[in-house]
Amino acid sequence: MIAINTREKALSKVTTLEEALKYINDGTVLMYGGFGGIGNPPTLIEGILQKGVKDLVLIGNDTAFPDVGIGRLITAGRVRKIITSHVGSNPVTGQLMHSGKLEVEFSPQGTLAERIRAGGMGLGGILTDVGIGTVAENGKQKIKINGKEYLVETALTAEVAIVHADKADPFGNLTYIRSGRNFSPLVAMAADITIAEADEIVSLGSLDPECIVTPGVYVNMVIPSQGVNWKWPWEEIKGSS
Amino acid sequence: MAVGRDKRQLIAGRAAQELKNGMIVNLGIGIPTLVADYVPDGVHVVFQAENGILGYGKSPRAGEEDPFLCNAGGLPVTLTDEASYFDSTIAFGMIRRGLLDLTILGALQVSQKGDLANWIVPGKRVPGMGGAIDLAQKAKKVVAVTRHVARDGSPKILPECTYPLTTRQAVNLIITDMAVIEVTDAGLVLKEVAKEHTVDDVVRATAAPLIIPDQVEEF
Image 1: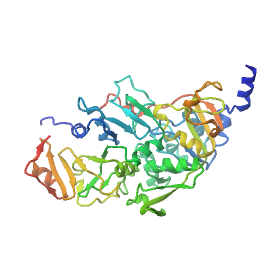
Image 2 (image 1 turned 135 degrees about the vertical axis):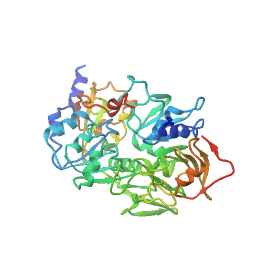
Image 3 (image 1 turned 180 degrees about the vertical axis):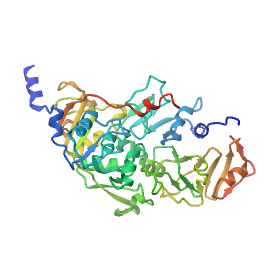
Image 4 (image 1 turned 45 degrees about the vertical axis):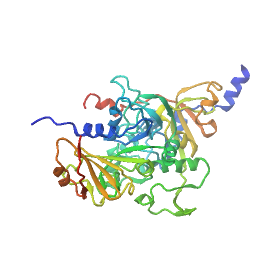
């Protein structure tokens, strides 16, 4: 019993929000998990807002909704640039982009996911034919392999990644929440510092190794989540259609 | 004035007729999302959502929504018995490998060759391509669903798209509130006309040339 506790203590990455926020500062290149807000870490985003961080460079699938998840950082004007695949659900992103206040770089969604995975896997990039014949190929190197043409899509990495986990153990082994998984395990692998906020922090040894999605080696800090602090768009429109 | 059929529901209902037993199907955002609620009785398909679900069904009843179980449009869904979750690389890996039998996507413009434009209105609206390029390029069959004409009355089915493309020569079938049109090597073939309209109405509202067969069904 004592041996287990000692091991848990020696390997623990559990810390506070305040400690985690020391790594997120003006200009930080920040990856985030989430799709339509689901998987965006609410407690870390609230902390970034409160801390007053600005000029962030974001990398993630989408910009959620104006008052939901990562969209709150866009709405508050804290973001200088974003690499993403879709911003249609957040009109503020489009407004800031058109007024020149926000730089937006688009990748096809599957390509964006693979670029982030490549970064996490220690690769230089990937080859794909997705987007050939469209503006998605502009400015990209092309390679012919066995007579077929591919785009060279470069790997993406970040200084910090933030994810919303369902369960975490002190070593940083993570599971995710249903459709909240999406980009989370990918960004968790692709940053220098990965911070997970978890709905539940369980004791070392209590997660089934067969079910762990992100191995703890990729995670640097685990903090407790205070839960979602926004209203989902479908809650707002319910009954109105 | 008589109350007509709701255009979005009409299009979604007709698109659902394209679902066949055993198909793996991805539905885009907007009108396509509604298709999941119109699966014909006795037809069993597996819906894929690119945010990491294979096997979702109808919308939940009010009050039974799970905030962490949504489709790619951010709307709550229910699971079917074969369901699995996965990350976004696997979601798009199965798309790129050609494992999707059908995708139903919204459209801003469709050309007579089946080119699809659905991610940017230059200078006005830039939602981004999301998964549309991956899906349109890689699904075995692509159905484009859209209102037949834009809000200002301008045609959306054109000889050539004027907006930046999502992909070239990918669309197999166009379903609108006025017509069902098949994209063939010979050109666009008018297959069906909505009962509120005539063949002439459809021809007038379509900028691309239409091939009119002897038999045009009503829907």
